Length: 618
Image (cartoon, rainbow, N blue to C red; front, top):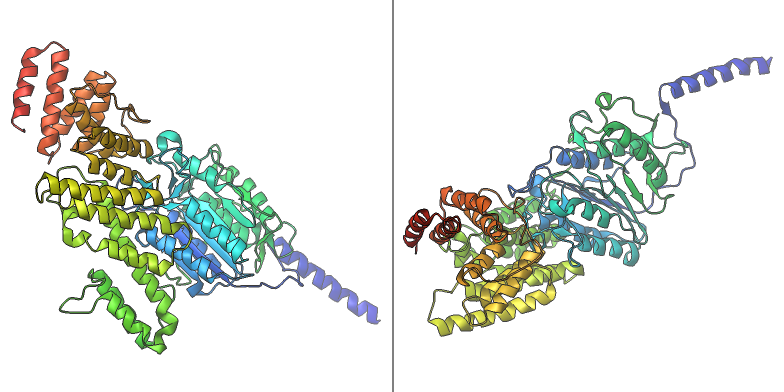
């Protein structure tokens, strides 16, 4: 009688279990290993870049927001808000990314989990030994990445330190290979960067959006606008990839899931995600399991990228002050930094450094000191990067522009020195910062004072500048901007070969940067069209260079002229003259070249007219 009563109950439980399974949700098995250690994440998504020549993406910022949101769920580990550094678009400067990675190094300890998620552009200008790929920050320059992008070498230093020295785990998720006309497009720069990312090192785990010879797709039909990789990654980590229903998604399982779902979703476009590391590594522990595969991308509303968990997007605070005293000091610091008062006070307020020193003497603010220091550090590095970017785009001869204002430039060596001190000379970030510090010392010594004193004094200043630039090159030998200004420091001296040598080096390291070509062009003109300068990329057509500037039009014209493509060169010189604001020097050179081309075509009358116009701009 008792057995008969139990049988219907067992049948009801079986039916309930079947119904639950048929709806696509399965219970998580018991006895799962507990999570150990603390999870910290740096999450970056950049759709819009500051430089107009870096093509925009559509949904990289939405992918980053969705990943940060997922980290706050049970499947993502319920990561506290203060342990997620989310940076999108203008917040994700190169300095902010690097300082956030340094935060991961400093805070990750044995048994912890560090995560770096990046959605944006990856590129490399050349295939030289020094340049093994870059992840572009919001404020990265368009053609001289060594002057302001996140090098993969630095990322690898961070990863190695976390995994070996700190004995923590490191997960790198990168969606960095997107189609677009970047500086390295001619040499498949984005794919080369992905190939470097795919290199395997000990004790690290990587999930990449595609193979090195592919581009990652994004579109409006995935999660109301997402990258296809990100969309299926989060669905898989939320449970759809857990094939054995043990409540753990391993690297093998997420890899299998992505390699089935992503190619099918983007066909006939080819995109196959890559997984690297120990295949049994647990990546997530879903709170519930969703039946794979996902039905239709447009029907899936999981992880849309909305900030439903109110994840902080301020990359500099690292821990928001919660008490009134902490909030007040933070607001004062930000106000001073926004006003550019780093070390110099104004009549209406204290300097940011003075505010920071005040905070260091207040024991109630001790828990906020590191976040305040990082806010100060990022602001200093952002300021110097903006000026360096302006100098990289500068057309020679525009001495009246703000880039030459000594008041803005003379403080930068101190800013960089303070930044180096705050970082403590850690890892490879120390070397490019030292190079930038020495560069600004050289620039302030010689190039800001070229109009002062007689030739002897100017030569003396340039000798000092050359010594500092040589020191800078020892720290960062692959930096094109250092070679360019070394050439500038040798210009107008008796040793013209040295000037030309460094310009050629700059052009070789950054084939799409216009300034080295312009300087080589001037040398070519001064030598009566008989100067045999050569460098990789010199004879290219120039279609990848910055459009819309007279400097670009003229440099491209000279390269076409050197290739005896006279008709094409003539059109570029005419374009140079038609652009608004063309400097007199460029107008003189353009008319001179037009005269020379007309003479070669036998049109002596037109050649004479161009020559007369050229004389007007001497």
